[in-house]
Every structure is written in structure tokens, then in C-alpha cells.
Image (tube, rainbow, N blue to C red):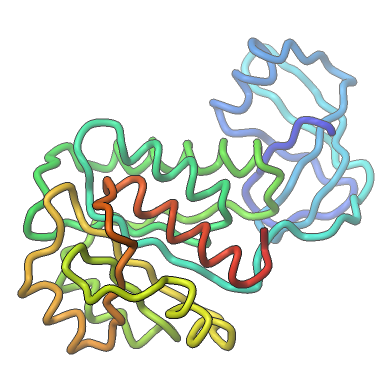
Length: 244
């Protein structure tokens, strides 16, 4: 399969497109591409093209030569992952793997027990680059949007935007996840998964989530790390919907 890259905007055959700086560096210095080489380009509308590279000294561009008709890699179920900010570089891992698993969007959340402090614009830009790279590597036709950091209370106000909201909690009544999903997810189009931080959600946060319409669920008898919980639940949803 050709190397795949995303470009901003919606385009048509014959358009000349430019690559983001990090993609341009990868093409020139890592993959050692030359002018006249071909890659696959996907625009913001999800259209894929064969593109002829033009490697310049300062920028890398490409001419869109032919359309590529291929089955979409995107799920009909639009899953948003609301991830409480973990320590260190764990968010990088969550974003990369959640993108590979088909997540539609990721919302970083500051809940009561979050202790991560580095949350500026530069961090969000880094996360978006990670999502784009993971989408390219996994053959997706869309890049998940990394939203701005929100508080738990702000996230609660968005619950009505979703058909289902699931909140894993280590103190939830035990019930097999397959039974919970089988009875509720098949007719859903938009799902929100809210994952707590290393210290878990506080009881009051869970009570307010339930009042706002969330379903509190168990992920089994073992307590999972926050980065593991997100991937387990995304995988279970994909399996239940027949995406994997």
C-alpha cells in the first residue's frame, strides 16, 4: 500500500496540495521521497487520491492525479472518547491507539482527581499530530478531532448530544459488558465513553453523571489502568457492532 497522508481542505483532481511541516519532513528526510514519486493523499472530506510529489527545498507539494475508490475504514458508529487527563505521556498512547480503533473524536477532561498539569495549546497540537499520524498509519479516511480540555461539569452538559453515554467505574454493580452493550448499542449512532483518571471518579461525579443520563458500567473484577480502560471499551464496542 502507498504511503498515506492527510491534507487540509476539500479538493478535486488536478489540484495542487501542500503537506503539513511534519509530513513534509517525513516525506523528504525519513522516507527519502523524490519529485515524481507517488503517495496516497486523503483530504478533509475523506476523498482519496494518487498524488505526484514535488519535493522543494522549503516545502513539499503534490498534484492530485487520480481518484482512489476504496471501502471506507470509518465505522457508522461515531464514538467520542472523553479521557480524563493521565500523568506523563499516557495521553499520547491513548490517542494513538484510540485512533487505530476508530474513535471519532477525543475530548480531554479535567475531573476532580486529575493531577496532570501540562495542558496548554502546544500539548493539544501535539495530540492532534499524533492522531493524524495514527490515522495515516492505520489507513483511516478521517482524523479524529482532539477537542479542548473541558471540566467534568462542562462534559455533563454535552450528554444530551449522544444516544448513549457509558462511564466505567470500579464500584459499579457487576454486570457482563457484553450484556450491557447488546441491549443498548445496536440502534445508537453517537456514543460517548467517559474514562476516569488514575484515581478514578469520585462518587459525587458518578452521581451527577447518572443524573445527566449516563449508564455506569463495570469492566470486570480487575481494576484497569486509565489507558487500558479506554482501549478495552473501544474494542468491545467495535466487536459488538461488527467492526472487528
